[in-house]
Image 1 (cartoon, one colour):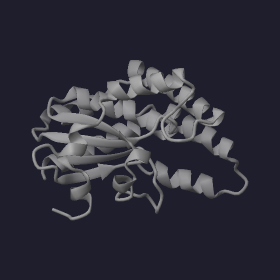
Image 2 (cartoon, helix red, strand yellow; image 1 turned 120 degrees about the vertical axis):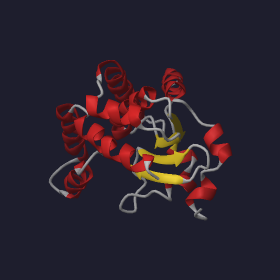
Image 3 (cartoon, one colour; image 1 turned 180 degrees about the vertical axis):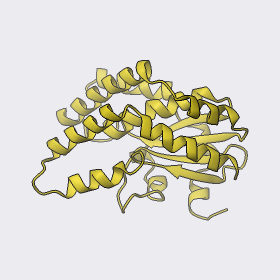
Image 4 (tube, one colour; image 1 turned 90 degrees about the vertical axis):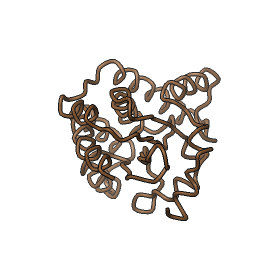
Length: 207
């Protein structure tokens, strides 16, 4: 076992975390008090969180898993914990976590657990993306030993590279690249994310 990630993701952490349903209820409760997760409760962050609630509601109702992914989930015999670092204001989390939750519900071998990034920066800092605390980040653990089997995130497929290019473009405002980001998700219809997990589940189940 490693002496970084393995020590930080302890049985106590895994036992005292949120289900997806808990997470959704927490966000709604916070927004009713004009708050969101984290320490920044500015109107901008509240607006992001409100939009994300609508995105999650839509995905909860509309997303359908592919037959290939369903088969991969049903064929998996390894007991896993999927630990996801997330925040209510994160647009990428809103686009991906509901789909991950639906995957976990498809298999009785997978338990989904959510933790807030900013309350667990020690764990987050073991899973940086290009030096940044990008979320969502999923860490797949062996349910019995908590050995790490792998990780995913923060974005599907090669989309991360495209977003970095947008962010590095001095002629593109934050608002414009945000619009491009959500347009990509709308056009992709969760297919790239689902394709990622067909491969990952097969890989993780053999470890």
